[in-house]
Image 1 (cartoon, helix red, strand yellow):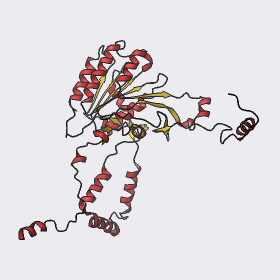
Image 2: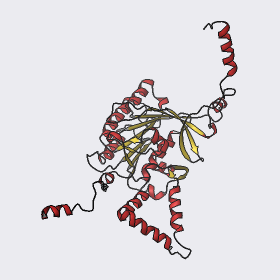
Image 3: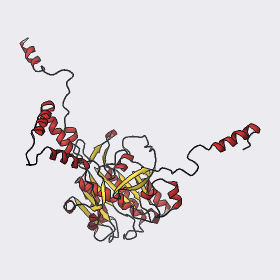
Image 4: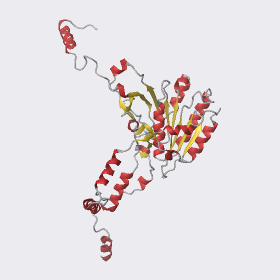
Length: 380
């Protein structure tokens, strides 16, 4: 009885309906900028919150994303810069390759994140708790003491950690550049694809980069990013070596598959032959294309609402998936690319503008049709 009483004394004070504290081990295994999804999937942000929502969470870790460029305007750089800037903000390792002599200069064009309104509101609340002489008021101290009393120190510290937690996806201001101290990180590598006659150097750099981010069961999800601009551009020395480029994409896809890295490749599909363009499409896990809008297209302006704010069209051809045979079915595949307040990228579904005389049902037409049907049978 004494032993039973001793053992029972350990459970006194806890009901069977008491909430057990959730261990933070699972959340701690996920690094900043990585979001877990269904079927064991993990995502990183594309840098555009609307695109993350459309793709079901973002870019899938271990996948290759291809973006078909538009020959009329370099709008593909909007997607590429947002993807790279999001990785820099989350302090994720980045490998960038571009057809230029000094690819590191491209980092200076990456946009800066928009200041969060939540942070401003939190600073205003904290400022309201201080008096004009810099001392905290008694009311603020009393409220803080009540929070500790009812929720405990663990929950208050968890709430503070949640408030300080970095956002998964940021809105970026295209008018401002990233701070220079973020670009001087040792986690950013740059490779020029302009002078090389072969893809050997780029493949070696990608292999070395991916070897540092191999996927391990139960390990920490430290994600990395690879951004390759205009892989088959005419400035590259391997421009006419179609089979070498296909072999490189196959090798890169195999290496990325076993790593915690997302590779984004943009390519001008207009200069590829039809057969090789289809091969590139097949090798992509996620396939996107972007098309610019003419400056003054009166017919298109009458057809679509919000035409003045549109920059281009984004079409989703294929969405990556893992551990599932169920195809991804999107509500819409073509979206309008807009600038919110002329600084942030926004994706919206296309809405057709009402045509003159089509605001409501056509009663005249229906009347004539019904009257004719009474007199004689309609002959189609």
